[in-house]
Image (cartoon, rainbow, N blue to C red; front, side):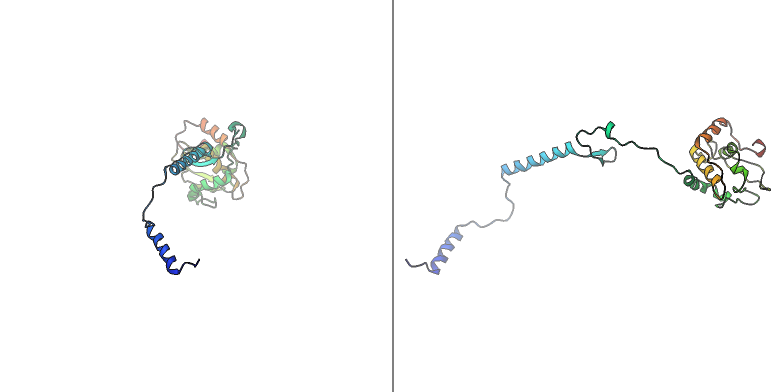
Length: 210
């Protein structure tokens, strides 16, 4: 049996190619069984993530905790400790409201605003110092042998600043321990006690009243 010639082979291939359909551009519709399978998988995955997602931070929508099975918030939650505040650091920031008169060095301005350095008015009677900051001071005052006659504004509820007990305690603790001063701190409870005892005060103190 003689082999087929090249002409015969090309003729057979030509007939096969002629019977094939030309490819068409465009999209073919996905078979229904495949569409149903993909839809089912998407639904299953969505349900899984809904039931196993991490806890979201309320109001922000941010993931904060992952609660595994058996998680008990009363048993496993981490207790939040008290916020620790550095009264000296806070007082230093608040003192920016005082520096224009008493100066960043605490040395004051001659004839107007007294120094806060090395004076019993700052390092001495704590109640007197709290009263001055709460309600202010007016009239002449003698400090370290010099007379000053500037007006000290009220920083308490009767003044424009409306500082809290904590804020007043911070700034007083700062000036009592800055620039070489070595007095003890003043705590918010002390300020609250003086504030309650002088709640009817509406005018600044004078030296004679203190």
